[in-house]
Length: 120
Image 1 (cartoon, rainbow, N blue to C red):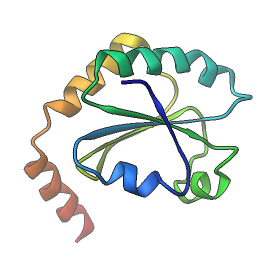
Image 2 (image 1 turned 180 degrees about the vertical axis):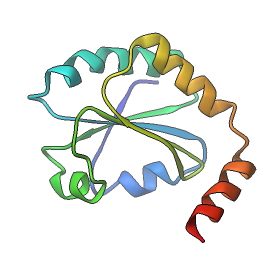
Image 3 (image 1 turned 90 degrees about the vertical axis):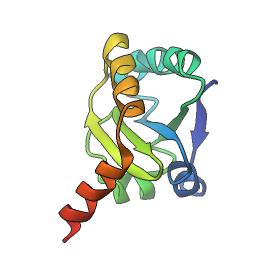
Image 4 (image 1 turned 90 degrees about the horizontal axis):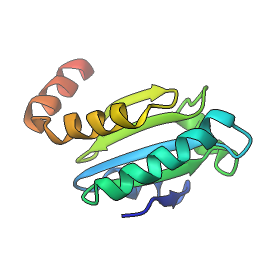
């Protein structure tokens, strides 16, 4: 599956759906973002069962602010509507592949329990 572009309008509906969604927050002027783009695109082809979404922070400044994105690229991962990973900086191909495989292996019942405990 190729990457999809998301905006403020469809961000929430995209990340809250069932399955895994990786979001690359980027900007056109960002050198590291440009270098990470092809790595992200290749991973989307290798993991057709995962949604790979790109969020242009310049075109969606309100959402970038709401997400408190202070450094780009920022990679966020959601599984079944729960954010399970967030980190600024580009990942090399092997690390991105490893991250996707780790997310696939998560016990989501345990993750939801941990999230619930943190919110109390």
